[in-house]
Every structure is written in structure tokens, then in C-alpha cells.
Image (cartoon, rainbow, N blue to C red; front, side, top):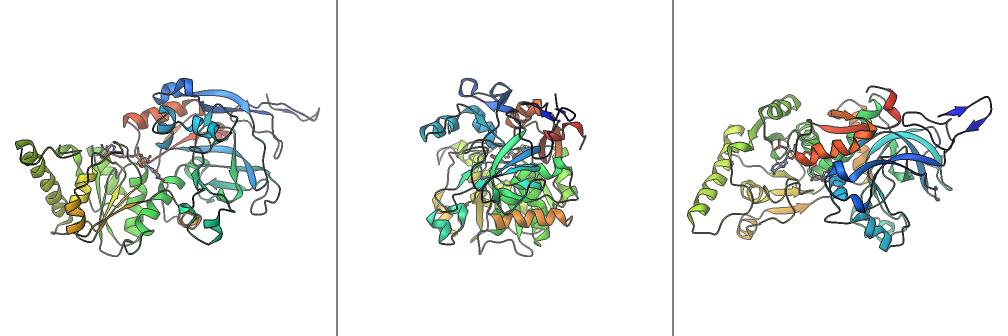
Length: 417
Ligand SMILES: NC(=O)c1ccc[n+]([C@@H]2O[C@H](COP(=O)([O-])OP(=O)(O)OC[C@H]3O[C@@H](n4cnc5c(N)ncnc54)[C@H](OP(=O)(O)O)[C@@H]3O)[C@@H](O)[C@H]2O)c1
């Protein structure tokens, strides 16, 4: 099962939760794998398998994963749409007929490739999800690497994510693990907190300013729980939207100024045809939602920033309630990626609809720094065992997940936090 120290032999495969001696790389590893033949809901798509441990090219690092964060992107990967990630990589010449997801995690540097100087074997690290070619001309010109043509998401567009005993990352994806956090806490917050940080602080002049009302959809979710804390710390006034009283309480405990229960309204998605009775009803609900924000804020003030990720169900409302000159900033589409935008509202009120995707290295270091200093709660919700990574995604797919960020134990199987 592990290593026979007396005989000086190592095995080619270790049980999940066991680790070889530091720096010894086994040939095979357990991984939670998605294959095209199983594309579908997460419980069908994910399966624990044994696969080869990948080689470590120059500039790359093999990390023994202690815990992995769970995110919605691998619900999409398991469904095989809108992108068939395995087919896309195979078209480019990648040999693996499978996908190992997981776009964040915590672990121990186990092997470094040629030329790596920023980390060494034994370092405790937190992994960030976006990768780009360091010789990409846009990167060399000093532009934001998140806008570089070579930028892709590890554990989604790129293979060998954190849902395995070992993961392959570029050296710059490794950040010092905040010492005050457990392995699972450290694994769960990078993706959501850095994404939220960029949404709220990366699109000037629409950075959160003191006194700004910020409407946060899904306030109790991974992104939302991070956004509430960032907005508070930046001096803004977070108003969260949720679907249950328990989630409302969670947001208030995190620092929301007020909460709206979206189940009190039913005008979601695209508006019906104008001039119809259905449209008049839809429009009345839309305006009632706007008035609800004023009621919660205690004054007639609209959000300068609307923090979006729900997509087609909510975008028409977000665009309407956003203050003139304000910004709707969106990074996802849980309810669908085709959304109605009333362009009259966009131009007449001079609003901004801004896309935002994960984060650059500075934003990643900002959030690990905040966590290190105790200024950001990682909001660890439910923790799953390695074999339940499919179940964790299923809960997310069905919207029945716990509040906050989710994680799965990998190397940290033997511990409870
Ligand atoms: N581009 C990026 O870099 C990036 C990074 C992170 C996440 N994302 C995307 O952002 C989305 C959210 O991620 P997450 O980690 O926060 O997920 P999460 O933890 O599952 O939270 C999502 C929240 O959205 C709310 N929600 C679900 N359906 C909704 C609907 N129809 N209308 C309004 N609210 C709805 C739910 O709250 P209530 O039911 O309580 O309202 C839920 O708590 C996902 O689609 C994810 O893929 C993108």
C-alpha cells in the first residue's frame, strides 16, 4: 500500500490519503475522471480511476494535492457542453482521452521541472486556475495576461486538474498557503475570491467606492460569500439576493447590509412581447424588485455595481436596476448563457455591461494575503471525500449545495478539516 522503508522500495500506486516519501513520484495515481462516454449529470460523469502520473515539463511543477475546491466549471465539463473539453484538446494533439478537472486546490510541491526557481520540493502551496504561455507576445508586452490569447483555465480547458493525487501546474500557479488555514480551507477559496475581487476592483472607474450599493446575486454561494466580504472591506454596502431564509441569515452574518429573497418575484428571464398583459405584469415585477432594493437600502439609491453570474434569468433585471453610469459585471451563467439586454436601458442610462473572468496573479496574491491576515473568511461549506467529487458537483448542479465554498479531501483524507 505505501512504502517498505526497510527494503527501500516504493510502490507504483498509493491509496488516497497516503503519501510516498517527499519527492518520490509513483507511476500511477487515483483521479476523479470524466470521459466522453459518461458525459451527463455529474453523478454519471465522474468516476474514480487509476491513471498514469504526468511527466513534468520545464517550467512546470507536480503538486501532491491535499484538498481540491469544487466549482461549477466542472459541472459543464461533465455535461460535455457548451465545450467538449476532451475533444478540443485532442484536436490540438493531446493524447489523453479523459479529463481531470479541478481548478483550485492546496498541496505540497512534490517535483519541479527544469528551470523552476519560484518554488521548491516540500513547499505548501495554494493553486490558482488560470494559465498562459509566458512567451505569449501579449504577456511579453506587459498586458494583462488574463486578456492574452494563450490564457486558459487549468482543470477545465487544460487537463491534470486538482481532482487527483497529483496535479500538474505552471510554477506561477503556486502561491504560498496561508498558514492559518487548514488544507481544505486553503483549497476552497482562491477561485471564487480572486474572481470576485477582480469583478469588484478590476474594472476602473467602477471599483467599489465607499458608500456604493452593490447588488450581489447568489450571496450565500461561493462567489457571493466572497463578494459580500470584499465589498464590506472596500467600504461598500452589499445587498445580497438569495432563495431561502437560511441563506439570507448566512449573508447577514457575513456582513450584508440587507437581503432580498428572489422567490418573492417571478419575472425571471427574457420579457414577454411588449404591449401584452404578460409584459405589463413582468414589468411591474421588475420595478417592484428595484423598489425592494431601495427598501432594503433604506433610501432611493440604486446599485452602482451589480455583481452577476446567474446569467439569463437575472441579467434583464440587473441591467434595469443598475444605477445610471453604473456597471453590471458578469463572470458566469448558472441559469443559461443566452440573455436578453434592453439596449435602450444600456445607452440611455449610460450603463456598462462588463465581462470578467477569474483573475491575474496580483489578484490571486491579494486574496491569499487577505486570508493570511485573517481579513477574508474562506467560507468553507461542505467537505466531501475524494470518492464523492461527483456528488459534490451534483449538489451544485441541482442547487442543493451548502452555503459558501465546497472542497474535497484528497491527500488530506486522513484528517477532518
Ligand atoms: N469566470 C470565472 O472565472 C468564474 C469563477 C467562479 C465562478 N464562475 C461561475 O459563476 C457561477 C457561480 O459560481 P459559484 O461558485 O458562486 O456557485 P455556487 O456556489 O453554486 O452559487 C451560485 C448561487 O447562484 C444562485 N442562483 C442559482 N440559480 C440562480 C438563478 N436562476 N437566479 C438567481 N440566482 C441563482 C444560488 O443562490 P440562491 O438560490 O440562494 O439565489 C447559488 O447560491 C457559476 O456559473 C460559475 O461557473 C465563473
